[in-house]
Image 1 (spheres, one colour):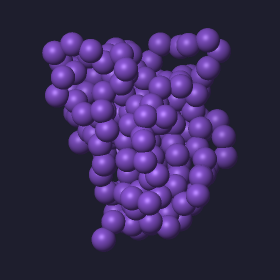
Image 2: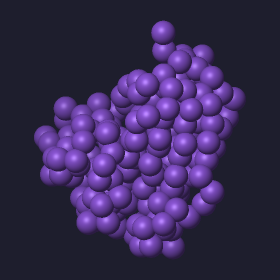
Image 3: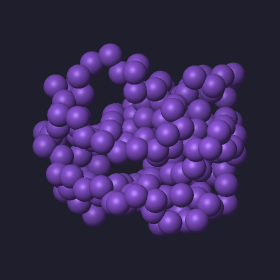
Length: 170
């Protein structure tokens, strides 16, 4: 069993609550709009970080950060991109079980076809009336359990979401 922290849209603000919520994770995924290099460095003090560049990540510090990344945790292939509309291919056809994205600042988990889409929401400066959130994703083999966490209360704000990924990387 592997617990993965999923965070996005920090926009240069890494809240102490986010660090507490991500403590104990075996890996962390940052889905873009990081804000500055120190965000990734601070997250890396907790666990290995897979990060992608968002539309607001500009300048020399962000030049080496890829726009998308793919990784496998246990039996689940994960594709990470900031803006889900920029994927340009069918994730299910490429054996991807989870797509992690950010950009909209709206937390949510849904399954389309055989792919689970996870948007942890925004953990940075509050926008509009949206909650300040991140997610944890517990993977055991090909089972995925996603929990969205409201950082203002440090509580889950919706029912945990569970799925069995039907795609794996061989």
